[in-house]
Each structure stands twice: as C-alpha cells, then as structure tokens.
Image (cartoon, rainbow, N blue to C red; front, side):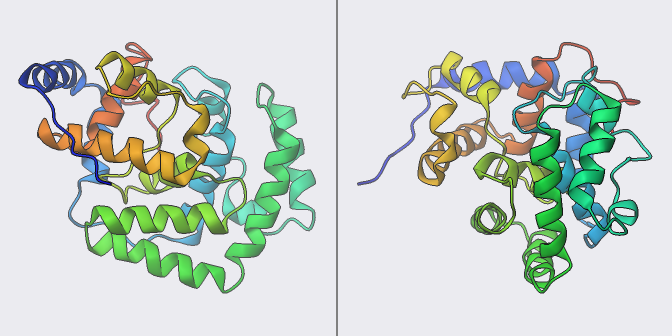
Length: 249
C-alpha cells in the first residue's frame, strides 16, 4: 500500500501565510543560519555531549525562553563534557547539579542516562556515531537523516524518535527530519491533517515516520524547509519570548 499526499491550494496558502508571520523570529533565523549552512564544522565530543544532555533535559519538560531548562543551558553549561568526563560517579554528580539548580524534572533518571551514554561515547560507539554525523555534515539527504536518527534512537539511552531528531537539529545537521511533539501534532490537526494525531503513539518509529512524511510533503509543497517550518511552529507557541540573547542552541 502507498499513501499519496495531496494538498489543496488553500492548504498551501494557509501554511505559507503562517510561516511569513514567524520567519523573522530570532529562533527561526538562527535555525536557518545554522541548519541551512553549506559549510558545517565537524562535530566534536564536546558539542555532541552538550546537545545530547540538552535533549535528555527537555524530555517531558518544556524548554521555552523563560523555562528553568533554558536558564540551566546557558553558557557556561554546568554539565559540559570537560567536567562530566572527570566524574567517577557521573549519575550522582549530574543529579546533584540539577537538584541544586531547581525546577528540573527527572534528575535521577537523566543522571543515569548520562552515565550510560558517557560509556558509549568513550567506546567504539563514538566512531560509528561520528561517521554517521559526518555523512550529514557533508551531504544533505532526507533518507540519511532518518537513518541517522534511527541509529541514535537505537544506540543511546533516553532517546526515542523525537529526541534523536532533536539532537540532529541541535547539532545543525538536519533539514528534513524534525522532532515531532504535542505542539507539532496540535498544529497539524489545526491545518486539517487527514488523520487525527495524538502525541502518544509517536514513540513507535513507524507511526513517527508516517507523520514525518506528511509534514515533509506539506513543507515541500509550500517551498519551505521542514526544519524552518518546525522552528516557526515552535516559536509561535512562545509568543515573542525568543530574542537574540536567549537563543543559545
């Protein structure tokens, strides 16, 4: 069986109008400057680690401009690589840092996930990871983005379909695959998506791929890169909260 996506002119005009309303938001502007750049620097362990931790922090917790998560992730990042790699009991250390800061959920779980992922990054897994990230840095193919997201989902602790794509997006390596959450499903439902969407089933890779395909096809029909449309949707839920000073990732 095969699904053929069809969008009416009114659908396209509605989405294009929405995007034009938000395209000057600093959050959208930064996404364009980073993710659509032609020359992207190699990903270091330090960069990968910080953004990996950021993804774990934002699981089941909002990260709007005034949220505890956004304040916690400002520079210098308190759980950066050079600090964490020296800790013998990383899980306990990370939990303590988050607890002392306050307002961060799941600190015990996140600490344990960080410790397990530290072992991964310090092993041969890093070589496989870097090879896949380099393929995205050098070339731009939607299929390769999805394969890399699935790899991260399968290999790293605390990651599902959404956060694996969130990590690629934070690294500036994705243009097509986006992190789909309740904001995206709500927005798609408002646009008249042919299937009523809920966020719960998005943990399933096949369901996630179905929704992602629809989103990418819609963005393509509107002449907008999916990563930019995603940024516009994300920023629309936060009003005018994003500025050049608080967009840090």
